[in-house]
Length: 212
Image (cartoon, rainbow, N blue to C red; front, top):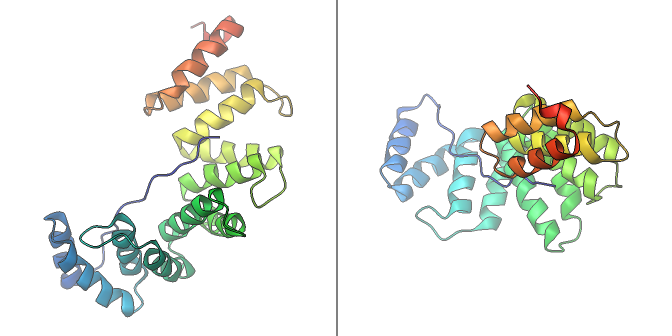
């Protein structure tokens, strides 16, 4: 299953002029200056600033990458309901689980679920992948399918590919070749190049689906 591994980028939008100055510094490459300002705001409890601090540490912008420090600030923002922080924290735990860290998948599941509750589109696909592959949970293809479908409906291209594959070929799902075709076409329009190969296969097997 295709995991959405992208970072969600820097959050702007606080009212304070000092925050605006930090944004300007960041955009000009003044990462340390930006980090200093975001850090002061983050210490005061602002979740957007906490998220930005975490992202700078994860990306290593002007500082040595520090995943532990990034996770610390992501968690502070995530606990305040910041969906992007919840997603990025889950993504890091997901990666740690792939490397064999105990209970990391369970933590990834928890934070993906929080991000899903906040309707962050990328989170549906990644949470679904845990259920599809039985990582931190029991394999549950019906649950995975439902989540892929929700993600696809939000416009997430990875979820569109994954739900299409299940619609087209998964023996545990009621197949719907037309819905598979529609989702693959939508994903291809968004730049998911792998959707092209699946479309070719689908059209070879069920030519009627692809006839205009």
